[in-house]
Image (cartoon, rainbow, N blue to C red; front, side):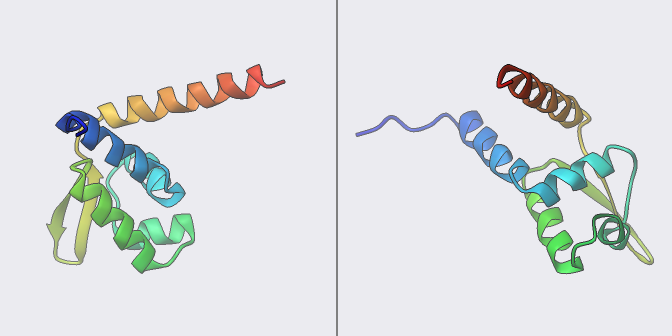
Amino acid sequence: MKAPMPERHYRGSRICRALGNPTAYTILRLLGRGKRQPTELKDIIKVSLPTICVCLRTLRNLDLIRYDNLRQGKLYYIKDPTILDILDRLETLVERIQKANY
C-alpha cells in the first residue's frame, strides 16, 4: 500500500492545478493589482461571468483569495501576497526554459 501524501503536498498540487487554468491565473494577476468585482474581471478578461465565478470559487476554496460584501456585490482580493511572488517565480522559470530551448 502506498504511503499517504502529506497534506501540504496535496494542497500544493491542488493550487498548481488551479494555476493551470489560464483564466484563474489571469484573475490572480489582476487581483494582485487591486480589489475587483466579478463583472470587472469579466470585462477585462473577456470571458463569461459564470466562468469568472467558477474560477473565483475555486481560488476561494483554495484559500488564495477572499472577498468583502458590498451593496452592489462582492469585491475580491488576494489573501496572501506570497502568491504573487510564486507567480513571478513561475514566469521567471518559463523564461529560462524558453531561453534554454533556443
